[in-house]
Length: 527
Figure: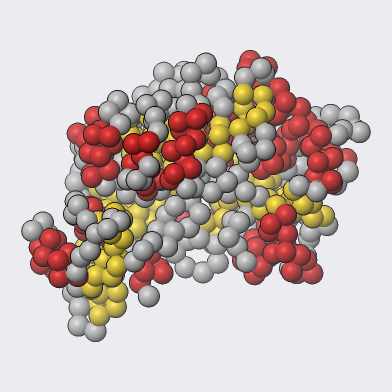
């Protein structure tokens, strides 16, 4: 297996799964050490930029110190305690996260779209002792106050109590011994069935991932500024964007919620150089009517994962923003984010449809149902292992044993790998369409639909059929001002696809349902 190479010195170290994994030799040994190193080196540089504040690293470090002391002395938060955060992107989330890891506590990020029952499950399942919540979501927490069995305190961001938490310190600084294998985050994933499962991420995993992101994007403190358009309760936002930017010593500009026009204005006004998000974000930016009204030449790289990267997106980027790199990649919560990537637009175009090779920290293989590695080019389940993979699912040993076998994390994604180590994601195992025994990868059909000049967005799902078991359904968002019929779309597909892959059903919508991270919610489209 061929992996990307690193310029950092690396060595192998034992892990709990019985094999030796590669780690960066010069890594910080805790997330607070990661922040402290950057504060010491780049204290006068900007760190957190959002609507309310522009903080230097020195100021941000001071607020983290204050908050960690107050969480320990005033609220009684101790090493290993869980604290749930229901916060939008911004300085509040960043401050609370680093304050918690400083004292060895475990952050439980909550999806801000959750209603009471959803939030209550994760708060109780994690045994969270405290909840810190934005004022706009306070009613969600207030309504379930009696159902939160372990919660002792609720602190509302924006209140006088919260301002005192970060701006005033009456007690001495807290110094807690934190080991790099200690748990830092419980990040809940939706999974394929049943209740969400809490993936436990370690300090070591997050730190190594942050270093890998900074190296892959070539961040330089004196040059770069990163835009974070994805939520911090998602691994892409928290680990790759926030922790990666802080390791790199660069400013991170937060969007509370993504909007293409607002993103364009920020790229222009802040002279943004990099963005990490889902490919849809770049697609919507490039296709916004306001695109030509602003100067986006500062943008040198977009790293996209979490969804497929259509070939049409690569072609549009090279035409509209020549010189800007596009790095399609692949990652998962259970591996702290990015596990494979390409490193340039040229490479992405040369290996069309690939998410690249595995990062230096990760081994990857494609296996059959018997866990045997398949030959190059044959489809199977992608499995990965390395220092960034998770410790297991919180309070769920059965799910952990199913997901991790001999250190290999079974991703649930169907993929192929070529002889050079390039990985091609075909589909989620649950999203593969089986039409009368013929396997249809939704990504293949979606890529064809994106070639249609009338199509802005497309998603393909399988729907129940009494004869074939499943049939192909396409849900399409047309470009502004365009019109099309289902028959027109089907005729277009017939030029590029075998007959059994052509969508039997075509539905037009004004928007596709997406989760806050930007991924299409395909279960809703199947209805």
